[in-house]
Length: 328
Image 1 (cartoon, helix red, strand yellow):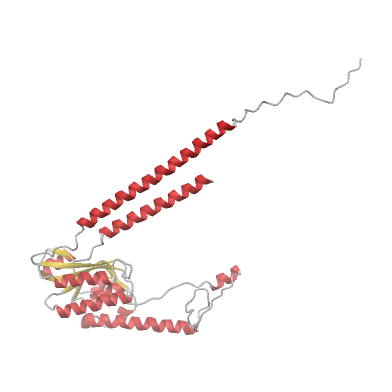
Image 2 (cartoon, helix red, strand yellow; image 1 turned 30 degrees about the vertical axis):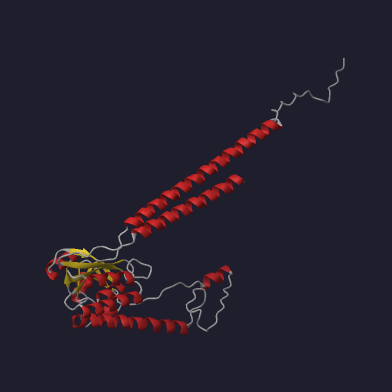
């Protein structure tokens, strides 16, 4: 017998797929899902509302109880003003803040002397000059109140510009003092751009308006002009130091070279008068061990309000982002 092989093979029937929900079922599921999303959004919005309301309540309480000023201290004491950090317009040691503290300290009836506690690497020559000049003015108006600069960790550059206006300067043997100089720095990326095949297109009105542009070659005339500016500011700095320190300075030109020294070396060069802490100066030099800090303090009310505002803004941005994600 001959058996013929069939060209077709027996195959198992495909598995039955689950039936899709009927239209009414699908509508119900969709409505439930969207209603759940809407409820979540409403909950978040109400949460933001109540948090904002609570924040406004706290701010109102702070506003009600915020004091417009601190009662002046009674009795004899030593006034203290801090110059802490970089001396800059936006820094904690800006001229307005330091000068405000100095004026309050000199005008305080019970203050027998003023300590300017300095811990600064320097900063703006203009801000430093403002403070220096104000110290000299206050000294002339209140000759009965001596002012002593006391260096803690560092008193360099603009920090020393400020200290030079004091009657005397005290420091620790390990303090860093000096850096009587001026700098202007930057970077040059000319060759880097050439290697990357990037063309610099700088348009100016004024021949030297693009002075010291980091993407352009250094122009000798611009460099000469910049050096003239630096030398001029340096000369003002030197004059302020010489005027403040007088013949106490050693006859050594390296003093004005921009170098820094330890407190012990600074004393040998005449940059400081002696060693001592704020407590020592108050107790042994001024004669009033009670110290009252006249440094203007940060407005806690404004600081709290700023932080609340930032927190609310972040929450609202997060809410908007979540909404966008859910709509996709």
